[in-house]
Image: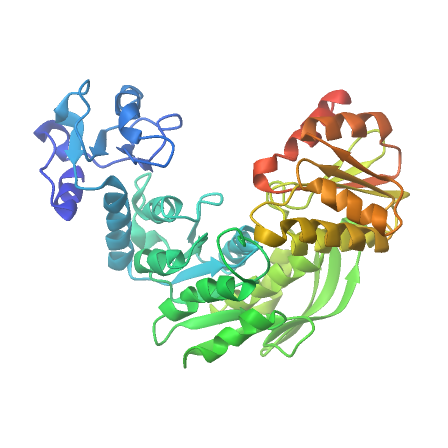
Length: 466
């Protein structure tokens, strides 16, 4: 009830007519708030939520949590606290502590969201009820909002067996702080690679920040670590706690062998664990997805999900939005939509996946600029372009900014069909004029570049909405 929440924050209880209300949910966005939700007026770097309190209440918010009183809002529906972000996080921390069941925290330079989805899917297949991160809400705002799902929509925390939470970061200390809220009992580190170098001096510094998750685990916690990534594998030496490893190339507790690519139909392999092995066929594409699968399988096995159940569930999973989605156009060409995000490692992994599609007549890569790579950003783009040329891609389109270096790198390596375009929309228009039957087209780029707009233009050009 709102009265109890005000007590947690040391705030005055709201007016008696709303003090006994139970919020339907929790929101920091007045644009999407629903009737009955509690609105937190967060002061962000760009916008101050206090400017939208009136709008949130007009849309039916049961009350608003504020740190200052807006002049145009009746105070009866306001709960004043010293800091609204602190209030959001403190409520989530207490809800999680009172719930007391296992939390699976997932971090890494890439693969967090898909691993989160896979872990949740496998646990649900094992008969557990799971609460998970909303979309990719993995930061100081999103993680507490996801945890508050334990008490949203009239839910009772006792209904849930596990919480599966992404934990993102762009600076040292952020995962440590998120861990004080989530109190993870199982920590998964998917990989460490050259991302966020705009904010870190080295990849080793990124690894140190990711390792905050391992440091935060309780003494009886379990770290689930990528044995194929040296920086992640090394984290097992940080503390004397239980460790489960996953990998392909190196000895690990959970491994894949007899791997066979099935083109656009996915892949099959033998999943090997300490409790046995089972054959798996999945529609997910690529080695990076296989590593996500292995991480999720390691967690599921720790939680008691039988191997046959894991294999059955993996046969029916689908890619998360814009993370390897297959779009088959009626004109006979295929787009692999991996437009959600990009970094040098994930780009080249997807290009190698594209090369494994035997049925492709031509292989095209439409790659947007990769951001947050620091001082070596131009060099990373050039090196990726050179490798794309060596892999034998037929056409490369670089989109925006430093993607010009991607194109120059490919040309320097002997690739003639490499072109630079300024916007995703231009890339979509180019594809609408040049895509042919039998083409398989990979579209990828950093989130801020918006490469999904290239696919939207292509869809409109062919009036294809499926």
